Image (cartoon, rainbow, N blue to C red; front, side, top):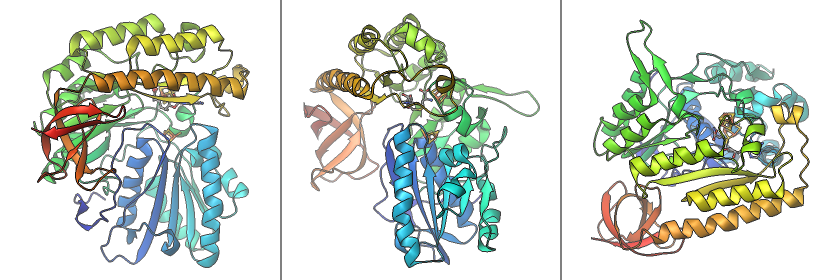
Length: 478
Ligand code: SAH
Ligand code: SF4
Ligand code: F3S
């Protein structure tokens, strides 16, 4: 099944750039133009794991004679790679299916499939609820897609939502469809064994398993050989990465894996996401400090600043523990290391004082970035079974807005302190604001925009930051 690494040469130039958002985006895979007979259109929702999985799916179907297309109307097979993390994510997909239905009416042979977390959560119920759907395939069953497609072509519906304890797709080289030829994602593990009470992921993604360390190094090395400059190692909880060779002679933890990837090339930037506060070790922080090419940026979701709420969330750490981890980051990596978080507003029984604790944690840590949400009860989770979703929607929204407003001040200040400094920027492409400017990121994952001169995508450029918009640094190459 493994195939040579495919680069952007035959991809549409409109390939979207990789952004470090944990969820919320939608991505349409770029078009491959290799003359294959059938056309596959994939839209991916949710987190980077899904974007990464869509590249694996494309690879499996590439072998079956499918090129990807970005033109829905002319697709033979339409796949939605879905997310269940919040109710709104599921509603978006339901609405999208209605729009796709109108395309299918115009092209009756079009097959429609649902992949990912919503497929896993709803299983064959999806077929009853959404008549347009022909295929329902869970995140561990993508190898079965060719068989399921034949089944559908034979007039049946196709469903496979079996979760696996072993599947890591380690031998499948993803078709890099979400990439700009500079940055790529590498999944290093799948599933999650934590049971945060609000979270649907353990149910939709199954048990945690770590991928063969050698296959990760091979994939990263192949990316470097193909000209890539940055990889992001992905997992729901990368710090619990743990792999042993079959003969038991080799054991690799996350810090060791990170080091091995960093050693592939000093020109390769290494990022990772997500770190769980209970698991991030000093060994990881020291590894980051030792290697200049491991970006000084840690996504360390707190979820709440209050210990009672954290206990209800079953996060297994309390506020003092979280603060201690942040202090270690500051001691080992210094004040310039960027830290981001996810926060949930209005979790079950959260009081105003407890909400204030979340605001005070924002003030204490001064995050560079935060992804904030109001609590959305998910069927089947611990919280849905044991706790009342008792905070009124208006209160949840108001608290969320307070979190967003407070965090904006800190993000601005974090950008402002970078003005006057020289940053190593990896160029991602033209800036959205003007064709005369390039956009890239510094080590801390902050956006940096500067006049393009003769620089191009994939270059490392030293940029003196001269001002900030609060959401980006503006500067000049030096
Ligand atoms: N593995 C990551 C989180 C992945 S889900 C971690 O442990 O940090 C991404 C984010 O979605 C979570 O961090 C959380 O803030 C948010 N989230 C998850 N379930 C949610 C729910 N039921 N309601 C609102 N936000 C939720
Ligand atoms: Fe969900 Fe918690 Fe696992 Fe993150 S660590 S995916 S929040 S259960
Ligand atoms: Fe990701 Fe959404 Fe699933 S955040 S793991 S796609 S529920």
